[in-house]
Length: 215
Image (cartoon, rainbow, N blue to C red; front, top):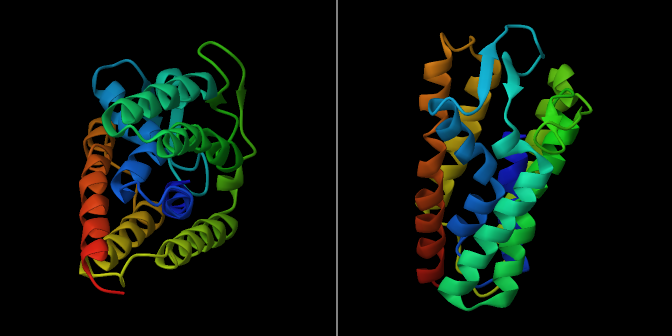
């Protein structure tokens, strides 16, 4: 649920006002940032099967390290712990830790039964991606809700071009990935997915821009 994860990160700003939006996005999308790294290293596997769902042609064969709920809880604990050591902010560290495994919960609703509970364990999923209209309405609906909640965050100024350029970029990339042709090979999938790491500093920059502008 590409846009849904972004929504949770933006909404979390209301309960963790001291956190950089970049940190919240990193937590909410850590699984998807880690996945292409593991894919390149050969530690997780995917194949391209056009028609496997209405939304994506990707058949996720194995991704227990990045996507299982047990490992996401562990990654959340580590990321939250690192934030606590760095910033000495317990409240925000708890939000960062709790935000990371929400990724699995959203994917559970979206994907077919291929999301593992733990490495080697059963795989589950409700399969929302079998319906393109339902997926688009929920994804963009959650995206807009998260954006509105973020814009209503107190003690910050109006959004600048950094945030709006990011919003347009994410919406355009998502639409292209859903409505465009299948990728030619798995290597292209991995390399393009690595671009998600750019979203983290981009979101942090957009947040700093907003903090510097008068309300």
